[in-house]
Amino acid sequence: NFATSISPWIVPYEALKPFTCETISRVQQDPEPLDYLKDPNYSSFDIDLTVSIQGQDMPQAEQVCRTNMRNLYWNIKQQLVHHTVTGCRMRPGDLLGTGTISGGEQDSLGSLLEMSWRGTRDVPLGSSGENRKFLKDFDKVIMRGKCQNKVQDSNGNERILSLGFGECNGKIFPAGSIIESNPAHVHLEQEVLAAHGVSQVASMGARRFHTWKLYGYWRSSCTWRVRIALAAKGIKYEYVPIDISKGDQHDSEHENRNRMRQVPTLEVYDEEAKTKRLLSQSLAIIEFLEETFPNSGCSMLPKDPIERMRVRQISEIINSGIQPLQNLSVLKAISSNGQMDSKVCDCVLMKSRMIKIWSVNLRQQDWAHKAISKGLEAVEVLALQILEELKEDRGNDSVYLAGTREPTMADACLIPQLYNARRYDVDLATTCPHLLEVEKRCNKLEWIASCHANLQSDAQV
Image (tube, rainbow, N blue to C red; front, side):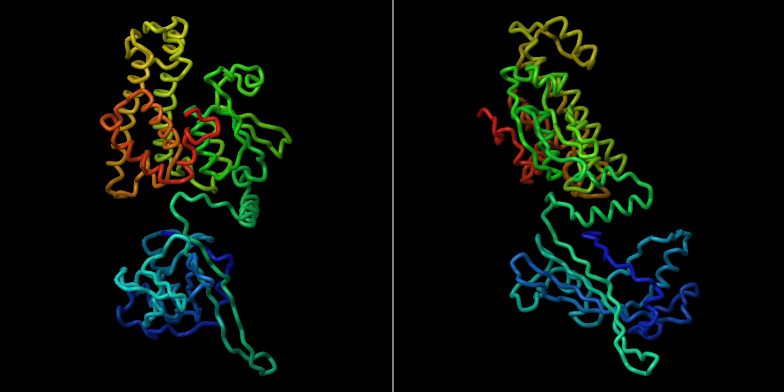
């Protein structure tokens, strides 16, 4: 169901009755309908349908198909009956598709796959000089439908009766592109939600929240995650560096922003409350952005509950099971002879219960190396298990970390963690080869690649 679009117009069934006509086949003999599908008033509607394509460098769209609803062998009444015969309950507002509507001529075939005969022949786009076998990135597809009939008014005068279906169009963008919402569509969505008593908070994020400011550090994993999430949602922000290598996070000014004296802190103006909001903790920030802008850009959390659980599971392994144990504050607590400050040791033991798996008689480098290696090994195994589980259903479509078709919060956690692993000389090719493949796919997306630590204004490279 690629690039499904819906026309803005709703045409009532009654309005179509003046355009009732015979189907192309006139009668149904081959195949002959079963009894429950026989329509004593077998007919269709005279709806003229066209499809045009406009390539990125084309000055105007060129029509490639003209067909008619008369070409349907099974009319819409029969399709509805057939859909419900096994007990499927239809409700007002349900949408049904007729399927491809093709005529007998080359230019009346309703599918580009049919026109190009599975990609074996070119389909010319009018006089533009361009051809297509399949749609390309940045192609605009325009579908139009209308009815037209000659009728006589009460005075016996002939006139043209017309009925339009509006225009349905869409543009193909490369996978992972950030698409800004149409304000008119957002407003319409809010009206629909309000009519059904649904909270509008998630759909009006851009109107309620604005003037974003990110306080962070170029090499901070948590800051990096939030940069990716902001890029995923297409949110522009001001970046304010906090140099944690010099201890700037302990300044009273920053402590007022973040009581844990950590990065990142995300500041945003709340138009509804007329105040600034200060958000901290990277995963909480990412979930806030996803819930506030659910229909903008790339989704950081899938809608399916199992997929969402997988994303959160992997994210927490990295966020709680790897990153804190190689964090600067923990490493600074380890002395040069490998002993850890007893208060810090007690704190980490109580918080994560993971410190027991290593001897504390380690140097800082070895400590971080083992913590990262163990965690990434666990993520590698889990990711491969998910991939194997989904392979039968999705083939190779599950290209990102949690088995999703687009990057998620899990990928936002993975990218900076692999960067840190390289800093501590972890053999990634041996430890997690699949994770390296995921990283490679992610970095092919410009909006993820632009978030790299070394590209930030405060980078010290």
